[in-house]
Every structure is written in C-alpha cells, then in structure tokens.
Amino acid sequence: MGESKLAGQFFDAAIGLLQQVRDGDSAEIAAAGAAIAGAVANGNRLFAFGAGHSSLAAQDVVYRAGGLALMNLLAVPGVVGVDVMPATLGSALERVDGLAGAVLDSSPAKAGDVLIIISLSGRNALPVEMAMNARALGLTVIGVTSVAYATETKSRHVSGTYLKDHCDIVLDSKIAIGDAELTHEGIEAPFAPASTVVTSALMQATMAAAAEELVRLGIEPPLLRSGNVDGGHEWNGRVMTEYADRIFFRH
Image 1 (cartoon, rainbow, N blue to C red):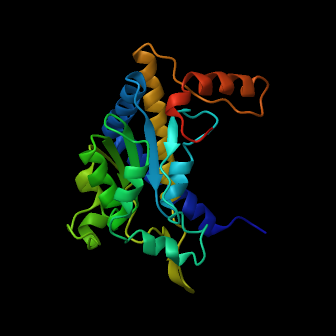
Image 2: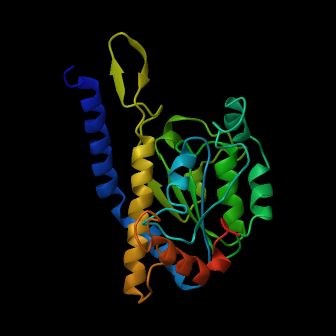
C-alpha cells in the first residue's frame, strides 16, 4: 500500500499546533517552569491532575525516565475513565460537585506546593473546583487547557467560570472545539484528536524549563534515569531516597 493521505494530514495538523504553542505560550511555559523550580528549591511538592484523556498528559510526567522525580499524580478515583465500568462513569464524575474538595483535603498537598491541572475544555466542575480549592489552600495552580472552549461552550460549574479563570499560569493548548483535526468525505464524524500530542508536549516543555531554571539556581534537577540502562536503578534509588519526603508514589 502507498502513503496514507489522511495520516499525513494529521501529522501536518499536529506539527502546526506544536509550532503555535511553542511560539504563543513561550512566556507562560517559562513562568510555569520557574514556579516548579521554585517549589523544588524551597522544599515544596509537585502534583499533576487530569481527568479523562487529559490524565494521560499528567501521567506522562510522573515516575518517568528523564522526568522530575518529585512530580506526583493527584489521583481522583474513577476519573481516568477507561479504568472503570462503564467508561462513561468517568465523564459523569467530572461533573460531580464537591469531589475535588474531598480529594484535595485527603491529599498531602499544602500551601506552597504546585498543582498542574489539565483539562481540555476546562468547563466541568471537577477541574474548576480543583483549581479554586487549590488556590484557597495556597497552592500555585498551573492550568493546561484550550482557552477557545471558554468562548464557545457553556461552563458546567455553578459559578459559570472555567479552569482558566482560577489559575496563576495558563498554558493554552490552542485545540479547537471538539478535539478532532480531520474531516473526510464519507466519514460522518470529525476525527484524529491532537490534544494528547500537544498537551504532553506542553508538559514536557515545562519540565525542561524547570530543569533549566534549577540549574540557574545552582540546584541539580532531581531527574530519574531509565531503569533499562546500566546504573539507572542505582541513580534512581539515590534520587528517591534524597527526596523521599516529597515523593508520594512510593512506600
């Protein structure tokens, strides 16, 4: 078989979006990296949260070779979506009032920590309340969202606000409403979402900015190495022992 025209179009769309966020979000990425580096330097902790497929980008920076050992997943039971039956329960839980507060109150998060909240639409109760409650607790909140949704959809939170309205720093993924980059004759629904590619790239770019800022501050970034290279396990053991009080995905 020859080359797929639609596959090529998806790559072109994703590359175009990556260029947009690289140029359009550069100042915000630097600010987010500085906030994360500051938390590391000051003895605070780092958390990431995402619901549904937005959780993929949060998971991508937790316990990751080449990633910061201090990044912890703020887990909300059931909202990853595809790990519960029925999968639609995950979407329903995003609209439940009070769930974010219960999770934060039960978590180790406290004033001075940094929380990254990832939500493509930013319109559901869970990410909005998570941001509101986190800021009330004194956390620095970094939101990763598509700002376009706030102009073209209705908020599902009682306040009528969106995730972007309750963040210290907002990284705009610039994903269009509906999260589908392609249409084609004979295919009724738009398809080929790019939000995971773009959001994960924003997260990794932010981690790179944080590492750069830590070096500027004279601090060795607490990075993990691959366990599949010689010496990786020993390296990781040293890093995780040194920062054990700020790593919550281990015992």
